[in-house]
Image (tube, rainbow, N blue to C red; front, side, top):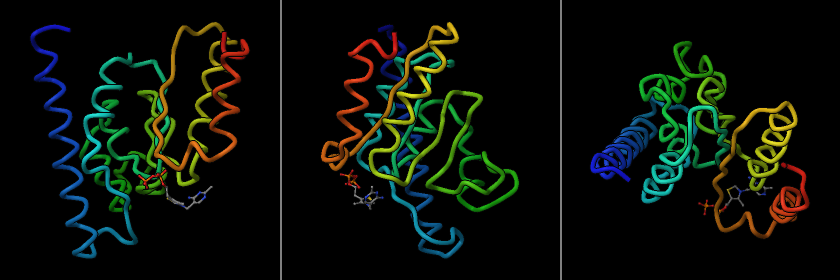
Length: 164
Ligand SMILES: Cc1ncc(C[n+]2csc(CCOP(=O)(O)OP(=O)(O)O)c2C)c(N)n1
């Protein structure tokens, strides 16, 4: 860790906090249609994990995915445009809060299905490593994930040699 790293981490945490506060306000005002699942209070997790990743490394997120996408380096303005359903959004406004992705920086997407993100990440990393790419992946999950079978299956797969 260098002297600049804590400042960079703090900036990421603050960016996510400000983004989420704005997003919640936009939902309350009706500008964002439907709902969102905010990442408030968990900002440090995404900031810390993504700080250890390289651009080519892969990330999958949960239904609280905004923080994961931003921490990996997505443009906040394009992310906000995505939540607003605009053509200028990360996914042309088609993905919205729950399916925001930025493939160019390894963000395979937020995911509405509890537990799906871990399984998707395992498959994606496995496929890329089989092609010879030197990368790692990180997924995020909430407490409920550990109650789903795919949590343990995707954990066993790499340890059985699947991702080597
Ligand atoms: C397979 C599946 N079951 C149920 C749901 C409905 N659901 C959406 S969020 C959620 C709670 C998730 O809890 P947790 O993973 O602990 O995250 P938290 O929302 O508490 O941060 C549930 C049950 C779902 N999306 N997918």
